[in-house]
Structures are given as C-alpha cells and as structure tokens.
Image (cartoon, rainbow, N blue to C red):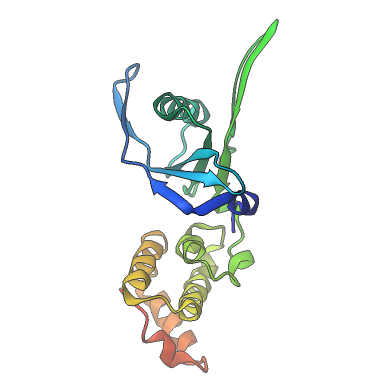
Amino acid sequence: MFFPVLHESIDFESITPLSEELYTDLIKGENRRVNIGIESKLKGDNTLVVIQVEPQSYYQKDFHQRMYLYFNLLYKEYRIPILPIAVFSYDEKHTEINQFTIVFPFFHVLTFNFLMLELKKKNWRDYLKSNNPVVAALLGKMGYQEEEKVQVKLEFLRMMTKMELNPVRARFINDFFEQYLKLNEEEEEELMQEISRLDNAEEFTKLPNS
C-alpha cells in the first residue's frame, strides 16, 4: 500500500528475519537497536537484500545522518545491498529529509537516500478500501481532524469485519490501533450509536474491544 514498486520486486517466499542487532554509538555512548531487519531476495534473480525499517516516533533533527550510520553498520555486517526505510509516526509537523550527503566545493563524496513513510501526511480516507491489516493498524496515525476521530475508529472496525482475521491477529491489530487513537467516554458512546444504525451491527460485536 505504501511502496508498491518495492512490493512487486521482493520475493516474499524467501524472507528471513534477522536476529536483533545491537550496536553501540561510540561517539555519543548510546545503544541502538535496528528495529526491523529482513533478509530476502529480489524476484527473478538470486540477489540477496536486507530491508531495514526504522520506526521514528519523535522528531530528530539529525535523523537522516543517523539513518546513514545505521545503514553503514548493517552493510559492514552483511555486505549485501540494503534497502533502508524510515517510518515517521509522530504528530508534530516537520519537514523530514530522506537524504544525507557529504560534499566539498571541489568534490562530491556521496549521496545516501532512504525511503520514508510520513504517516501524518497520509489521508486516512484514501485507504478505507484496503484489505491490508498493516494499513488498518496504522489508520489512527494518519492525517485526520480531531472531529473525525469517531469516524476513523468506525472505519477501522468496518475494515476489521471485512478482513475476517483470526481472533489472535484481530486482537493484535486492535491493540496496535488503540495505542494510537483513543476515544473518550463521550466519543465511545457516539461510536456505539453509529454502529447500532448499521445493517451489519451484529458483526461488530464479534470484534476485540478494549
């Protein structure tokens, strides 16, 4: 849903999760874990790639530089092509940079680029027809107005009824969503009233509910 060209290029039958990597930033003395690392192959050939996903929940001015450092650490370890992706989930409005460069007036040393997903810049209404559990889980972090919160939750539940997930997966996705979007008592009451007007209201009672 977010990177369709990438999705078409990856052989999902060959996915191997990497063991959790722990690196030390010797300069600042911080520990850093690579949140999601997956080894896979490209479709049509045997080229191995590592997909590196870094979730970022707060604004960090030098994040593009740190992304490059994490990329280097992974490349040093595996020495195969690495595809870096950053997922920004914070609510503040900032302009993120998905490129890090080292340039002199007389010589261009390098340009490092990474894919990025800025959830707050995505319109939640554009994804309502999706049958993708990841999209449903992230719906509450996309761009919506405060007065739309109840409608966002209703549409999330509607997506859940269509996906027909098993109870364990359904609860996992629901818990994930509710970490991002929480309704107060008045909004919950409004949601219940909205659901009661639906022809398939009984289907909603089968869903996990906090």
